[in-house]
Image (cartoon, rainbow, N blue to C red):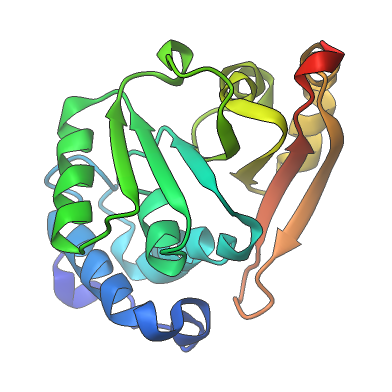
Length: 212
């Protein structure tokens, strides 16, 4: 597949990114040109790169503030589109694979994203404690295994905003034991992004460490 087959930029991109759209275009182009060769995206993703990945990630940007972790950032999804859309938020991209953290640092530098910190390591090895205002993750693992990994990174009263798909309600049901054990409240499935043909599905929850 060639970059010529990259999905045309949808009109919603301007709505989501506003005056930051040129940066989003540059990141999308870089991912299209290098993503498959560097093991960041699969060979079938170019025809849906904007809608399935870039806009699916960035549309949730209004939900965040403060300092936010993106666990398993990989190709920078959702972290890089979010950092582009919200330069007022500090983003910590947590990724264990060296070749992916190299990519993330390259992109943050090339795009001038001084609100991005890249941390190489597993979320389980996070050493700062529960200090983040929120944590997000996309396409990492089912909630049952993901919640015990991400909740300890978030401050008391902070939030989990996890990007999911159609399986989200079933994942919530399967993770009831973990939800109780972690003291999570206000757990719900939401969709956001009416400007998109296919809105993004989220699982959101509030973290209460004193309830554990």
